[in-house]
Image (cartoon, rainbow, N blue to C red):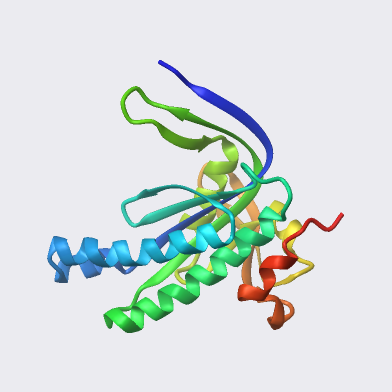
Length: 203
């Protein structure tokens, strides 16, 4: 078995889950359902590429992204925040288009990960570690339609983005954690496309 793995100190991990998708599956044929999910995820794929992030995988109606694995030159926390906000905007558009109430729950955490390729026949690039579990918990404990982040991500983003503090909340397997909800950029003019050239690290 070949396994190629690398450790990374600071990586931003984003988990997103479509809320309302299960209800939709009761009304649509499997083909229609997969078609719609594909449309949503393809639009996420475009965002990943534009923001120079890495799509790690999709699991059912969940989508996982990491920033900071291959490019050290840019602010991965900020790119991940932009990704989250853009994903929310896309899902609002798809809700209108499909005539469905679709909402996205998103969780973000920044920390060390191990990334690598495993498999015998089908090689899969994946990331592991407590950072991944924490990002996943941020997503599962987020209110529908919200982007929940940890203190580590908040510290990297608070200068450029507006947040609502949730205080200490009980997180499965973690005790209580202080979390924040990402609301949007402090300066509206930096969000969306114009934010991209400014994603350089501010030291």
